[in-house]
Length: 111
Image (cartoon, rainbow, N blue to C red; front, top):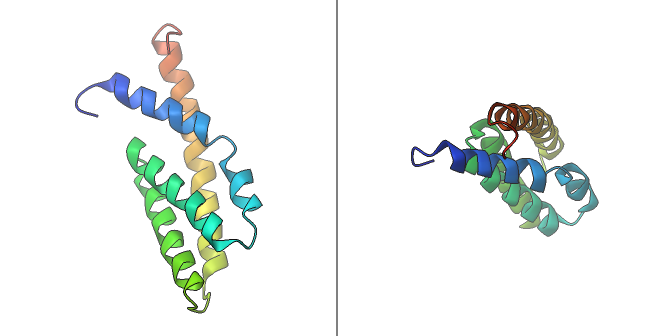
């Protein structure tokens, strides 16, 4: 982040805060592929911003698949891609949360 760790910490804090309820919001999209694509796209962008490359790639894979299905392409492997994204999201969000607490603690509580 341009050699400024504080910018990364701020981006990490936004990721942790903004995506705390992402899984619930994503599930609430239900069968609405447009809403699902929007939820996944937002996650992909945020993951890329904080350097969570595996999460960004998983989200990009699902975003492409959902877009294809919405255009009439058969949904082969869609559920598997969803599960891969969910697993990666859960691990990434937990790691980001722990890192943020650690960074905040190391900075003397001044986040």
